[in-house]
Image (tube, rainbow, N blue to C red; front, side, top):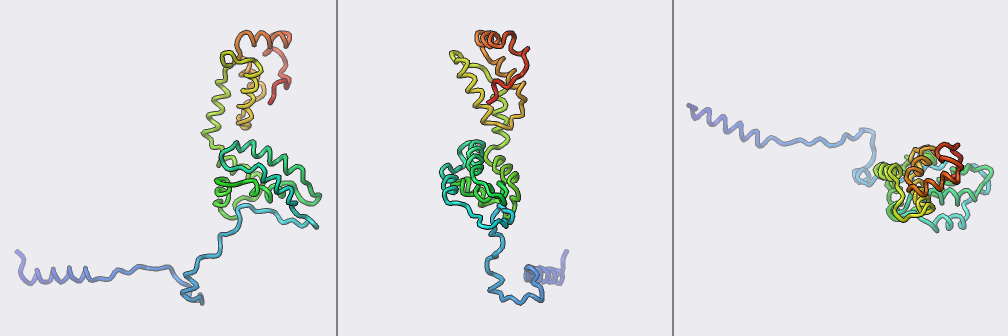
Length: 229
């Protein structure tokens, strides 16, 4: 049984615990920091650099022609088209402009942002500052962003399981097969594997026609580059 004295002491201790102030530690400020509080609360000015780092260009009289920029912008990538097709177009355009003292990869790094708009440009703007140092870095990040591994898996399966459709001609089947290969240029299948897959996808009549054109069983022949896309 508690005495009155014990009860009073217990209540007193409880009130003291409730009244104990909570100390929240803020960030340490160096003693030699002479900024005012207003200056410390200002938004930081770091972190606004571009993601792409273009190597220093020391060439005299070098400038990007507006006609080249306009050509790049004539087929901008929004994030919804095929990224491989965009890179093919971009490489073709940038190959037309050369400077003896400027690497072509530097020209590509300078021009690539002009080739993007919409979601694709937002993606590039959100990349960490100075995180893309080479053209290979840029291509890798671009493809991984807009051509995820799941899409690669899907297209690889489409290639492996390719079959000629009913009433589809030989030429139509071949064009459709080449289209799948172009959509996934990193499919990893050798030319021999591609030829074998396509031949075995054909109906009996088209296989016989192909054998006849090859002068015997098609797969017994040397794997010439007859059917590469």
